[in-house]
Length: 157
Image 1 (cartoon, one colour):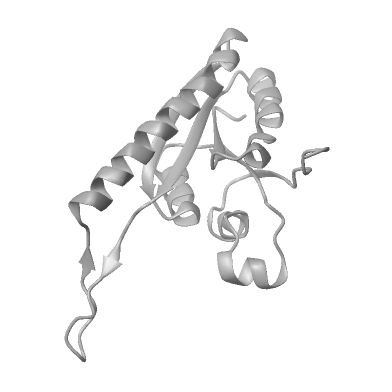
Image 2: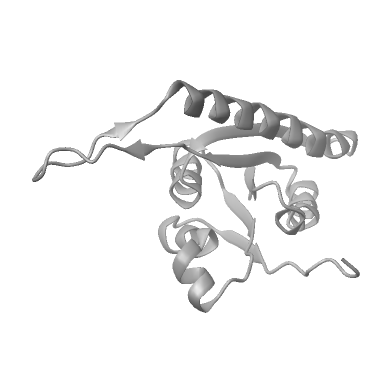
């Protein structure tokens, strides 16, 4: 039923709490797990000429920082993939630049994803208004089955 399962991660321990749920689905359905992390694309905008759209600017430093973040994310995902592969689960890792919610939806649409798994950070009120909700955007826009959990804060920290 679920040939490919997208596991949305952001590098946090809270987001990683979705992995056991995705793993169970993968084992049950003989699915491919796609560990996926979006790195925020660095952009600055020029003030532009009044009455025109501002132009996006990328500096060499911004590009270098983004590439370093992508490399770090690849290593992070490969570290998470190793124990899953030891359980005979087929795992792919994907890192990309973009805006998290939009990029998740677009990747799922373009890559035959059958199930999206994601942990919500559970922000509400002002925090949600300021930071938005990636999980909410994915729920509203994907049109695919979604496994969503609200992770628990680590105890004793």
